[in-house]
Image 1 (cartoon, rainbow, N blue to C red):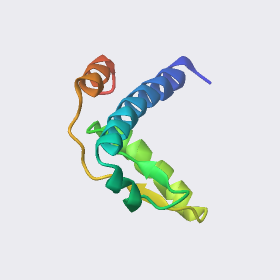
Image 2: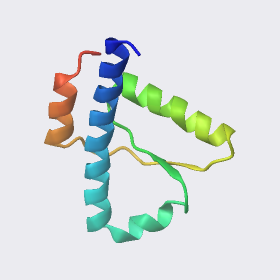
Image 3: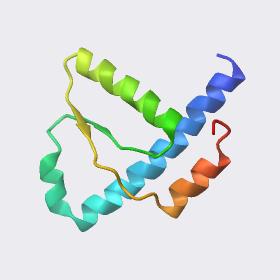
Image 4: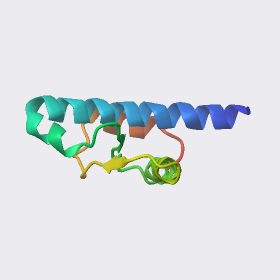
Length: 92
């Protein structure tokens, strides 16, 4: 694997983790929202970062093509942590 691919994967992971923590915080404050997520579903959270969202959609399609269930989270506001992670990325 070349360094640019590794860096891209690390950047994507950083952004996805940031929005995952934001979403978990939302779920802790709104436990009824958990009922909307199907059991065993892959959860896709919009990041607001075009290239990451496009890659996440490709992953979602792979899951669906293999018979899996995908739950798309409605748009969340970006936290400062997500904005900071996005500001460090080189793909904008």
